Image (cartoon, rainbow over all chains, first blue to last red; front, top):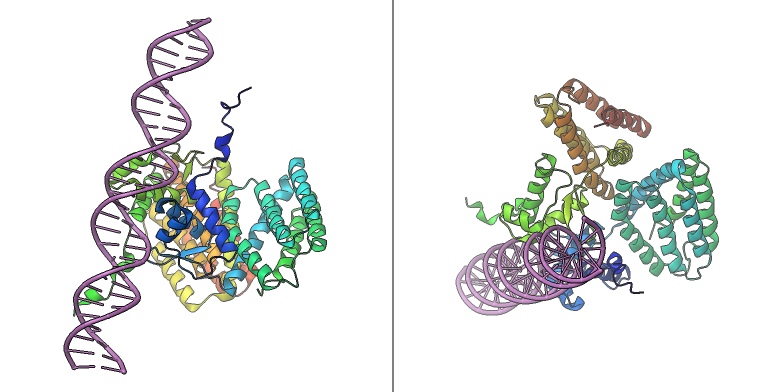
Length: 221
Length: 221
DNA sequence: CCGCCGTCCACTGTATACAGTCCACGAAAG
DNA sequence: CTTTCGTGGACTGTATACAGTGGACGGCGG
């Protein structure tokens, strides 16, 4: 049985641009690339062993995600996020997620519930707290995706990376008082999911606001 | 007095990419490029008399704006916006603008008021209805800009062009029963501005919801 | 010592060149 | 007539080449 004709691979085929994007993104999120440091295309191209073209596209993408900023002439640096930036980020997130909660309350499907429950189980099974916080973001992203609301999802994507940046930063900064332990995250998500299934927009909204507020406390990074 | 050293020009310096972006955008909004039609880089580059590089960047930008979509292999076409797309667009717009209204109610400055009033005066002085609808969008954009909330503005930019696309389309489709006459737009904006100045978040929100609903009636494009 | 000017260099914007891929179309086999 | 296979062309993805610009730096004049 020769499956070579099935074109299974093309779905996951990855261009050098996307490759470069995720590599640079990871380097920023990990702190390897410090906020404010310059990102010369020439330099990055050399390090990633590709030409400037994919690097350019990666930088454009990351600018869109808010991790990179370009000066009036096109020179890129790792964006420096201020306190206000983080506050704005979270107020935006709150608005988007509340909208998602209300939408989903009206249209959630058994399939959605199943997916979300599986994700919560995955969170419960996790030991690593850094990993957990990523799963948490993924859970919220799944809620937004489930709404099938394209503009909402596009907007979410413009802040997602910045949220992960903040998470990584907070983890490094305050390793002792770890945010979002399993004991808090998992039950919170179960309550949220229950509210989303209640069919009541206002219940869903309130549950989401509660969920959001548990994060907001950690804002002063 | 030689001003050649003052570098006044660089502020408005325009790259070929941006040039290409606005030209293609205009062509789509005007209907010259029909939804669904393909956009081969080679072809566009030839027509715009530039190389493929600026065209590529323009297409990436327009994809972000939701006017262009790329298939799994990178071939671009003018995006076909469905009825649901427009509904989602407006619900997104409503959410963002309500958020903006609440924010601005808390922090509006005399300068903001002055700018917005001047824009309303400009609307009052306009005869052309197509022009008026663009001024209307610009007015709402100014409200969002005035919040000084970067993520909010970034999100707005991802839907702005699609809204203008819908406007242009609606204008062509129903030339007789013109939407948004001056008699409706200007007083509506004055009331909205008054609510924004009231200092009350809920008044601002309600006024914005009213403003949004006047648009929504026209949805079945 | 301080400021001004010119040169050089690092870097981007754009063009061109090259390689690979998918699809349409047509020929050959059933 | 239908199906299969092969081939050519139309594109994109990526690399390389070229041109221009602004800033850093050093020398020169005050």
